[in-house]
Image (cartoon, rainbow, N blue to C red; front, side, top):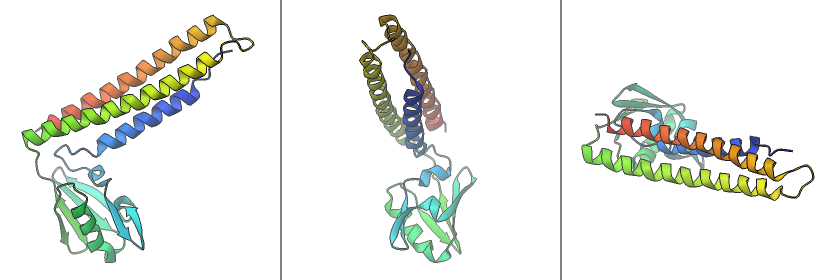
Length: 184
């Protein structure tokens, strides 16, 4: 009997997806709808993500356009973007909001890379925790009927191999985002 790795792989993929979303909000100096992911809008008596109340598009590398589905919440969206701490200046233009994305300074790019490394390290910690839990489950199979010491050793080797593949994927993600951040 061998350990079922499907649960491990699902948890690792969730951790990777979390990191992807987390670093997606890091500004690279070019307009991307994901920049507004952290913005929550106070509308209809509740807080909603901006993507739930408006269409967000990057019309060119330096401009985001936010088109609310309900034009009456235009000012609420503008206010939410202003207070989100993203250093963006929304401008209401008729029934849409235009957001010019200023180019990043060299110093700000380096700050962003530091933040990126912190987020990647948090991802590594999550993934190590998932690995540690899976290893405990594998080692807990010791003494069960039909499970030999060789089976456990083989499962641990397989676990480490799968873990390393996911860590390599995380490193690749980090390198691509760093290149993106430092690109002028």
